[in-house]
Amino acid sequence: MRNVTKDNITDVFKSYMADDMPARTREIMSSLVQHLHDFARETNLTHDEWRQGIAFLEGCAAIESEDRHEFVLASDVLGVSSLVDMLHSSDDATSSSVLGPFHVSGAPPLAVGGDMKRDFGGPVLLAQGVIRDTEGNPIAGAEIDIWQTAPNGLYASQDDAQDIFSFHGLMTVGNDGRYAFTTVKPVEYTVPSDGPVGDILRACGRHPWRPSHLHYIVKAPGFRTLVTEVFPEDDPYLDQDTVFGVRDDLVMKYEEKPASSFPDGMALSGKVTAPYLAVDFDVILAQDN
Image (cartoon, rainbow, N blue to C red; front, side, top):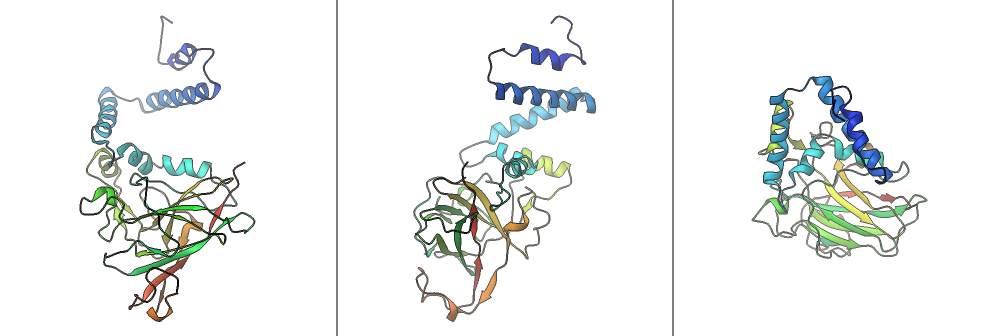
C-alpha cells in the first residue's frame, strides 16, 4: 500500500498479516492494533506523549529481573491482571485473584499443620480449611502453594535479610482435603513505587497500598488451577486495593482465641502462650472441562 493514511492504516496493517497465520493470533493482533490505533486517534497522541510511553516500556525493561517483575506490576496496577482473572473465573468456585510479581517457585514442603512463622515476631495466625469441589466433596491430594509478606511488609524476594523461601510453603492435603498451617498475621504493604509503575501511580494521584493477604495457588488433577488471595475484613485498604485484587468471597474474618484453645496436631501445639488469631477458609475448585 503506497498511500497509507491515518484513516486506513489499521486496515492496511491487517492486510499485511499472512493468510495462513493461526486464527487466534490473527484475532488478538487485529484487535490489539485496532485499539492502539483508535487510542492514538481518539487522544490525538503527540510525539512527546508517544516518547513518554516508549520510555515507560524501556524503564520497565531496564529494572526487570528475576526478583523484580515490573511488567507484571504494571499489568496489576492498570487492572489488566485482575480483569483477565475475572474473565476466566468460575462462578461456582472460589474467585481467582492476582498472582503478583513476588511468587517464588520451588517452595519447600510444608506438612499439614506446619509452621511458617518460625522466629518472626507478630501475632500467631492459624489458617485452615478444606479444599472442595463444587459439589462440596473434599479433594484428596490437592496441592496448595502458600506465600505472604513478612511482618516488615516485604516478600522474601524483596528482602536480603530473609531466606528466599521465608513465608513460603507447599502443602499436599490428605484424603479429607484439609489444609492447616500457622504463620504470622500478614500486614498491608506498598507495591514498589520507585520505578516506572510508581510514576503511573503518582500521575494518577493513586496510592501504592495493598491490603494484607495470604496468597494461594491450589492444584489438583482434573481441576482448574486456582490462583487467589484471601483478605481480612477489617483491613484499611480493603476497598482501595491498588491492584484491584479483592473479591467478596475472598474476604475473611480473623477471630482472636485464647492460647488454651490452640488445637493439637499442629507444629506449634503446646507452644502458643498468648492469644492467637484463627481463620477458616474453604477453597472450592472447578472441574477442568
